[in-house]
Length: 243
Image (cartoon, rainbow, N blue to C red; front, side, top):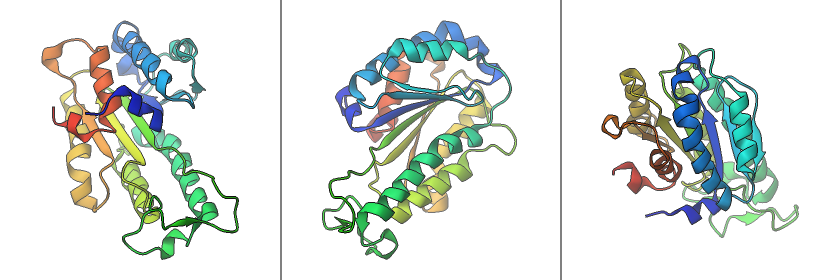
């Protein structure tokens, strides 16, 4: 089973739903649980932990847990749940950066690689016309914390499918991007929406599996550190998904 030191190999990013319905969880449950999880993640992510919000444009990249928590406290839940727009705002720059890396540093171009080749394969060599030794961008472990179904027109499926297709086209390794949706609260509609992302996308669209979900355990009561730690590791370790 994957343990926390494995986080060192990934960039950890939190995308937090700050819609109005999150207010009941914000201070008493989510903030303290997220504080402990961020403190753990920062110990292993040399580049710092990123935190973004669905609505607010506040964000930070820092190795300081207090700084990240101070940012979290500046944002108060309001508005609605633009899940797709928030996902695109975080993922599109990351995948575009991977595409630029492939164009600049990989030879032959990925569009002409053999079908069974990956940019992780040793015989897909760096472009001889470019400086050598420029590593592939680190894999991303994206943790999406949300309590409700998305707004109309904001379903995350099209964005996820697009990103997976772009990764497939580049033949990125399967661990390059993991998205872990974490349900906050017990809304049945939200649970069904998240479950469909985990169970259906690969077969429906013929894409790589980049989504896991952690659904709220009604028997477990309050949101806690253990719940979020499972999510933090779950995007990188499929075995946790079936526990």
